[in-house]
Image (cartoon, rainbow, N blue to C red):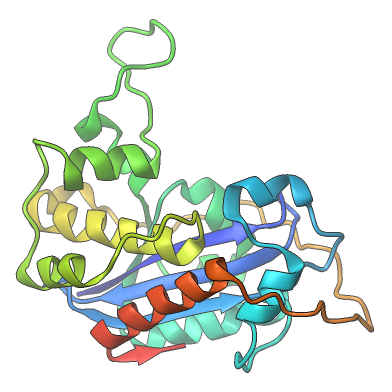
Amino acid sequence: MNLAVFDLETNGYAGASVLSASSIAFDEEGQIRGIFNRFYLPTEPFAPRLFSIHSLSPERLSALREGQCSPAYFVEDWPELLDFWAKEDVNGIVVHNARFDWAFLPEVAQAAFPCWCSMRGLTDLCALPPKNSSPGRYKPPRLSEAVDMLCNGPLALSPTKELRRAEETVNELQAHVSLADCFELYRLAVRVRLHHPDRMRFLPFSVPFRPPRKPPETFRTPLPQHDPFTEELRAFERTLLALSETVC
């Protein structure tokens, strides 16, 4: 059974635009089958307060979109993501904090594939102390916390041969962008599937979808800004592409 991991960077919370959408599809051995990695412009004014999180600016987005033959807005391009999952024969989608990321897909897209939220599904396994003193309850792990515990720490789960090859090939990307988070989620998902397959329960999952503002009839594409950030991200994507069979 093939799976895919999925992550987004957005211009805000529910009802905002998606700035980047990424997914990595892989098989039972952890072999990467294909990559979906696209960048988009917001349909509403850009939220500069989020720059400190994802480091994506309109100028960098314009640079990263060069050579990308897709609509300027995710709200017009999400069917291509579903086509990617279908083409790779994906049977389930792994999303960390599914209540957030899954909500940026329309309901018809949410209904197309079953979903497993790794944040909720790994809460008991990670067993992180709660923020309050509630007895017998654990804090849902952030992606970085789950990866540190199950992939990097002294109690880390062993990888498959294909995952080990990927980890030895791909250099860590410091930027907090969707493709980098997808690679970390892929590392996590392959290990959990190998050692704790009973925890991965893929079920229909529906959350309210709030569409972003309609795209403007006309817009001025920002001048592209090529810098070390965009160059490192493109190099990271090329390395993953070399490990995969297809890219979108």
